Amino acid sequence: MDLHHLRAFVAIAELRHFGRAAARLNITQPALTKRIRAMEDLLGARLFERDRRGTMLTRFGELLLPDASRITVAADDLRARARRAVAGEWGRLDVGFGLSAIELAPRLVARYRTAHPDVTVSLNNFSSAEQIERLTSGTLDLGFLRLPPSGMLATRPLFMDRLAIARPFDMPFDRDMVSLNRTGFVMLESDRGPGLSHQIAGWCHSIGFIPRVVQRADDIQTVLALVAGGVGYSILPYGAGKLMNDSVRLEPIDDPAASWTIGMAWRSDRQNPALRNFIAVVDKMGIAGLPQD
Image 1: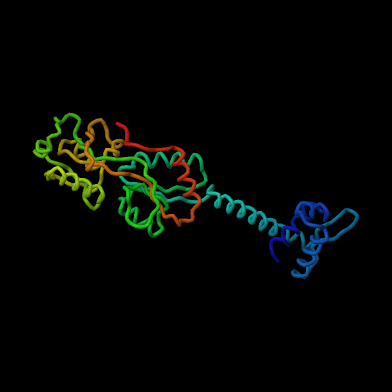
Image 2: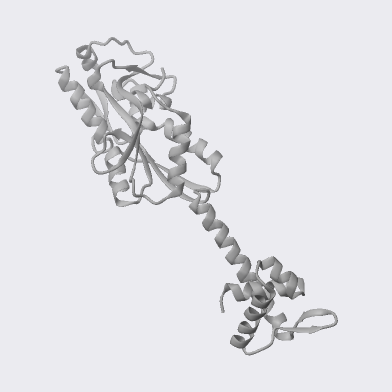
């Protein structure tokens, strides 16, 4: 017994007429009769009786109908959900982002959710290195990270970010790094932001500067709190400016060695229609350029 048998049975039970039931199912009446007879043979009992009032369920048919209706409705729902999943209108999307995309990634996810409200989206903060690992292993669908990533990943550049000096709003500031070093720097632990640490090290090397680190912190919020408290300056992505409050300011560094590209990355063989739709939403927005002052 399969869904064709159950659909035939339910249609006749609801319409009480073989001809109308055949029309609903878009089959001939002889084909419908054949399905019902096959079902009756399989179950070992009659399902319908015909008299002057039309086609009536037998007592056995009445007992079977609720379960048959439930199964066919569930099958129809499953088919509808499967079609929506194939179209990327239902499912799940796992997204990662780094510090530079801390403002952009949530904004894009919000735009995507508006267009595709029935897709569940997770959004988590990972370093670029961890995003690459998760993308490669298949536990992440899409990442916002620094380009180019290692490994065979498809990418889409979005904007350029750059290093900036974070300083307390009321602390004197000039661009003489030696002068800033007298106060010292608060730095994010290198294992919490390996890409950022590498960028800072490369820029400092290019200008022959060694920052005097007075304190390290495990997260960006703590770094900002320490800067706001006057413990020292810091070097952070300018794209993280949305995290700043009135007590901290970012002074962008205008130097090619202090700049890098942020973009999206994903596995090109990832079979997730929701991912395809997310990329289309981003493409439609046409994002490009540096984070704005």
